[in-house]
Image 1 (cartoon, rainbow over the protein chains, first blue to last red):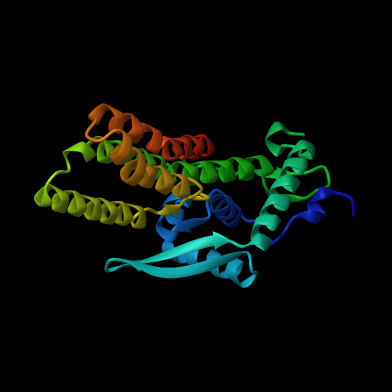
Image 2: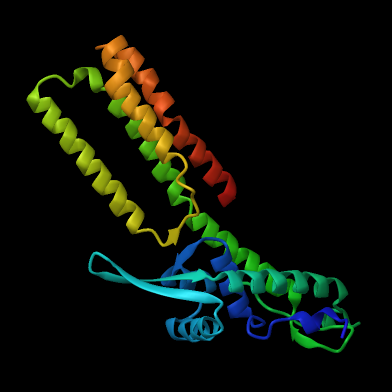
Amino acid sequence: MTHPRHRLDELIHTPVRFSLMAALAAAPQVEFRLLRDTLETSDSLLSKHIGVLEEAGYLTVQKGHVGKRSRTWLALTERGRSAFEAHYATLRTIGGHAVDTDSGA
Amino acid sequence: MVVKYKTMVHESGLAGPDPGSMLSAADVAGARVRRAGRWYVLWLAVFALYTVAELATVPFWHGGRVGVFAALGIVVFVYAMHAWAARQRVRVATGNWWVAPWIVLNLAVLLLVGPRLFPGQVGWYAVAGFVNAAPVLIEAVRVWRKSR
């Protein structure tokens, strides 16, 4: 099992979850609405993905208030950051091996 | 900007989202969050400006009424800065290393050097304000460079 695809993390290997991890890797804590707007997804879909990644221990969810408004903050755990960095590196490696079907190869 | 995902087939026969598209989308998402963190650069710049303004006006703080207004101004400023930070959607990585030097310099200017050696000298207090603001401005530049 030497092909880099064996190192891919199935939990992260969906476009929304991978971008979510990338967004969280860019700051210590990011608010839910910014993630929703950045990833151009719905609240319910984003919540579903967050639930999966939280259960895996890749991110933490913290709820709070600013004035009367509730806010949900998300942050990567150390485990999540390691998983993201490994997945990112693996995708870059695979990208070098890939054959684009559009080119007819 | 919406990043579209292409489907790729690798040499091994693995099919799925194109790694290049996934990486591009991830880079775009990361860049957007970093840009959203730039509020902190402005926050630091305002804080630095306040530092200069505060110290440059110290020679005019004569009399009880002016002192009360100055103290009220500080309280309102601290509250406004706290409220501004609390409303942001990204929390920025900062060691807050600049806080201790800022406090030491501020107290040194206000309590020691200024009253003893340069009482009432507006020019000196203005220069001292810029020196006091230096740690804040250095942090602002550091955060700006990281957010690009």
